[in-house]
Length: 465
Image (cartoon, rainbow, N blue to C red):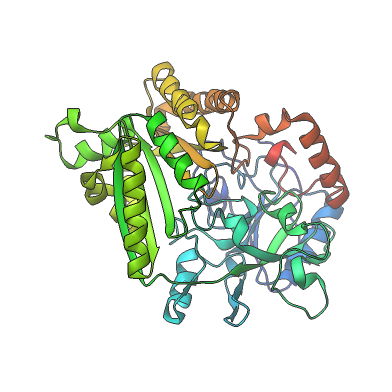
């Protein structure tokens, strides 16, 4: 889409903050992705759903685009206001509304940061299960709208699977509650049962169909014991066979998180900390596991995983755990320092989902990108779910000199990943071209979009809509 500014300044609802000074708007041009920035005419920061409903009614009448922003930590370009108009900053809706221990549900507003929610739940011995590495700044609403958290979980699958229900404001100002809360006075306690799963319609919708104003999530006990461990394999094929074995055997119930790293990423992380390390001893693929549960359960899980790894030629690789993985899981700020921003000014990331058997093909695309675009620094990783994987291809680049090259390379990478049997994850604008190529699926999305947002004001360009 062009960056032409569309839409007049809108009158902010009573109680909402509004600003339009060009200097103030600078930080609202983009997220953390390599997607080109947009140029909004105005930012409005509401404090409740009623203000959002008033704004969307006004915007629909004026046909002014509205882009919804949480923490701005996503890397798919969904919040970049390419069509101009208004950026709706949900940072003012930042309250944890209810912690219902009996039902096992926490309800919060979209601007709540993951780190803040974790701090409130910890004294109760509770957690929401999936917490991203970007927890200090990422918001619950942003994760829901973008179907974010490529972290996934071998125990909990994905963030969307942990959502009980939503409150959503539609483009005409209608307030919709999904799941059990659709019934008057029932509240959030069940996602399915009334009819079709309307909750899922807005998870990953990138704010194209409505604005999420409440999120209800399942609560889980904090594990009594946690431990991490890393395992090295000769090559990705052996590692993929090992992962499939674990997933088929339903042996991951005490694995809260597990991720895999290809040879180039392992080499970069180890040699950055120990330049004299013997490169010949590095594995061709490494997997890190974060275990949680009662002490005996964790010990048994570690034994089962190591035994399975040995069947596929794997062995423990404690150096990687010491230098990287344990810190990644236990020191959230560490993610920022090790993500690559210290060496290059930006990191473009493409997230994809894939069957476990396609992991070697996924890594083949990464190696092709390295060969075809050697000026960029490439890396890759996968995350285990109960079934299948989430994968990330990362390209580190100098924004001052390499931004156009990085954008072109990421677009080519997206097409190659689709050819390798992967599908888009966290689509935003990064994957929009590939989503449009899914003819029947995208045509259905357009019909839903036309019904819920006939003026087309909500996040134009996301998902190719």
